[in-house]
Amino acid sequence: MIARVRNPSLTIGVTIVATMILAALLGPLLFRTDPLAIDLAGSLTGPSLAHPFGCDSLGRDMLARVLWGARLSLSISTVVVALSLVVGSVIGGAAALAGGRIDNLVMRAVDIVLAFPGILLAIALAAILGPGLIDLVIALTAMGWTGYARIVRGEVLTLREREYVVAATTLGASPSRLLTRHLLPAVAGPLAVQATFGIGGIIGAEAALSFLGLGAMPPTPSWGNMLDAGRAFLLVAPHLTTAPGLAIGLSILGFNLLGDGIAQRVGSRA
Amino acid sequence: MIKYLMRRLVSIVPVALGVATLTFAIIHLVPGDPVVAMLGDSAAPADIEGMRHQLGLDRPLLTQYATYLGGLAIGDLGESTSYRKPVAQIVSERFPATIELAAAGMFVALLIAFPLGIVAGSNPGGAADMGAMGFAILGISIPHIYLGPLLMILFSLDLRWLPLTGRGGFAHLVLPAMTLGTALAAIIARMLRHSLIVVRASDYMRTAIGKGLSPRAAIVRHGLKNAMTSVITIIGLQMGSLLSGTLITEMIFSWPGLGRLLIGAIGARDYPLVEGCVLTFAMTYVVVNLATDVVYALVDPRVRIS
Image (cartoon, rainbow over all chains, first blue to last red; front, side, top):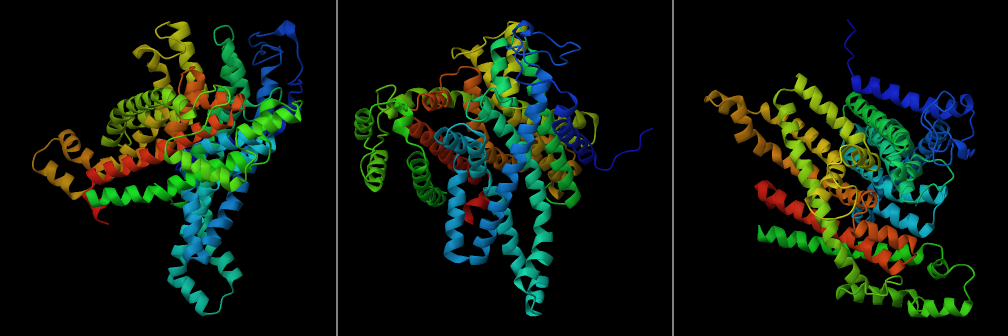
């Protein structure tokens, strides 16, 4: 019998995410087919030994495109989540420390950003900024920072009242010591959970924007624009949607499970 | 209750104003000249000036903002440059299709979520629970842009049961509603399971079973009602994903709603129309949130008082 795993979400999540990262890092180095090389003779061909995932309408190798798409998807979502984390934490922390009117103003701003449902704000920004990877990062960050701001603000507000923090302040602890010794350990768990779910969310949002033609532009391989291109050939070549679709779904699944697992581990969220 | 309703109604005014202002700011302050984008780089300077004047973009920003807010107050969203019709008219023509899709998606979500959540929450750790939660985590992870084509391949192209795209009768609605509702179903089912597990441990459930009610009847009569508050909360929180999900789903199934209008307007660089669509989506979300809070207050009297 296999030993029962205590935190299966964490184990499966780590496995999927690690596989995805390895595929993104090493995939294009090991499988050296050019994702942009056009071969019209191989148009829409199914999986074969030379092309394990088949070829798209221009005869480009789907495996190479999915692997390069993984690089794009994972790097964009990591950058967006890191930026959102920094921007959100600074704004949320500053609001809580300033208190009063400034705090009120910042929280109203958060409410207004959150009044734009789902990826609508990112769509509107991407529409005006124009397609491009940097614009895509800006649009997704503008949408994503609020969650982190709320967490950090909430933690700072409750921590200020905690006895051990009051004790440390009374004993003359400097603000930087308070920040590193007391605040950071307290927010690290909830932020890690939020960021892990956040990466999964941004992978989906990036794919959706690219699908709509507002993110990565062809010929750059991104899972979203590959799915969009594959839609025209659903009947003759369903593998064109299967490969990028499974890649998106599996990545989101991996980060969701990892987030669940971390949440169980740090004991935040149900 | 009326007092609570009034208070909530008043509280959406600043948010609505903020939404209008942010939408205006995105269109007017973000770098990039909409008129040049509309007419192309090679357009004659006179044409650019003419268009700028026609759209009122040559006036001071504050004047434009005041005109915009004044127009909003009377339901005037400006004129679309590609349709040459009032934006408000185009938006109101497309709006019902989006609401129809969103409502159908919500219906599918509830239809799947309740059996799943109840089965899972009645016997946590059992085989049915594992199956239901396995389905739920898959449902949360599969993106609309893949689930849509997958359902199309299965039900339209292979089985030929349902039409591929477009809006029409009930049959046209099934696949888009399933695409939209699956993720939501999974999230609601997880929440329902969680709150049923919490509720099962409560004293009144022990009393209900103690007085001779079968566990099933106890859950249906007492448990579900008390589990509802957290379910309504999660539904409220998910309304944003539902609305932006309609946008993607409309693009997949060529559904003639607001989302497809918006993406078309972006393609045509029709900024007044983009502005109107974004604003309508956001305002709908604000109103839906208000409605969720009201339902919440109706179900749970404790909310009204605080």
